[in-house]
Length: 294
Image (cartoon, rainbow, N blue to C red):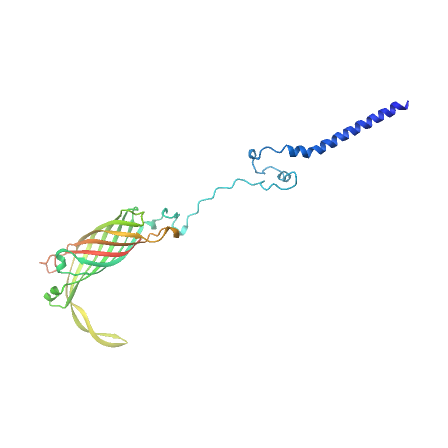
């Protein structure tokens, strides 16, 4: 009677052992299946960890995923405009000028002027200075208001006829002169210029007179003193061409607006004729100027 009981007991123990062995084999196979069946291709998933717990950001081996939580980097922004430069962004030769100051134009130079035509008999060479300021409408066209002062001498035969030892002709003017640059984007440029306005000519005859100079102590000497003169106010025109060359290098953070220039113009002034007590005929000169323009 005892054998069936032992048989039933051994069958129960064997079933229990079989279930336990199957459970152990299933537990041992879990890491292998996880390694053999990786997650889907990472390209199909976002790298963002939004909505994941802190444990989800770690791999099964306990090492943090270095790429977890990274999002796409934004594109590099354009460099901000420099407020001190009037909202300009410089890109070598291609600079974008938007401020009103970039439309201002200036010039300053000097040189000599030569008499031309019949006027060469009653006036000689002399120095001159030219200053100007204006507005640049486009890269090609600008307009300047120019001041010019000319200091010419009178020939000896003319001063002898007037009974004096020397003389000079001073001419100063205010004119409006457009400037047209033919190749403004090139380092070397050719430009045309011309205009007209108001001219005043003062002709003076001088004689050396004894004078006394005092500076800490006094001493005597001679100085040319004006003994007679006449003047006239009238209109005049001028025109010519020039060459300019831009200074600065694009390798130094942009090209300078500063240019060196040399130009020659024909100047015609409607001064009174020789029959008038206030003139020696129309004045014709060729001023040659070397200077800077920006």
